[in-house]
Image 1 (cartoon, rainbow, N blue to C red):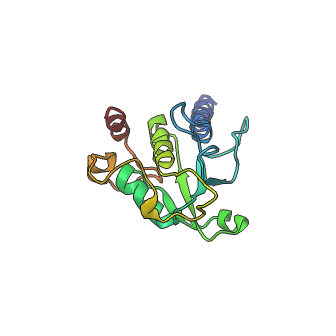
Image 2: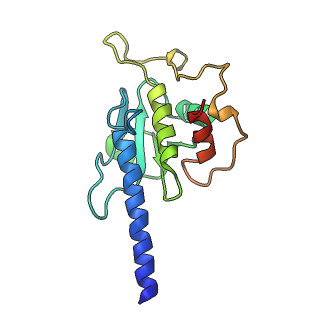
Image 3: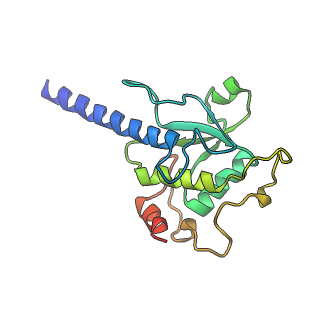
Length: 178
């Protein structure tokens, strides 16, 4: 039927868009390293975007030097990102032998700017790994945003998250223009 064909076409467009977001997050955006290359970031789950039906744009990860809950709070307070830090009723933590993990979920209404903001936040939250440091205290890790700067998170009051990644395009654009 014509209606079914339109629905199928729309779903294929959503899938293609989400595959592009997944690629951007995995490989980077040209300015920021992707999840596959961020020093100290361990990505759990698929590490590529297969052709056809495949990977959803949901990413489970841990970042060296951070506990999940404090990192989630930093991402929210400094960058306006609502990234989960829990077991989220998934088999991912059990499969990889961890109790919790960070989880960033993107959907069809998230923008490339949203994805780039997550990459920027994670790239700024890493420190170079050295042989003399295995565990860094949170206070010693630079996020690239000083306490006195006007970070994106300070520009507007928080909104209730409608998805796991809750950053408006306006915030990303405002930050990019700084």
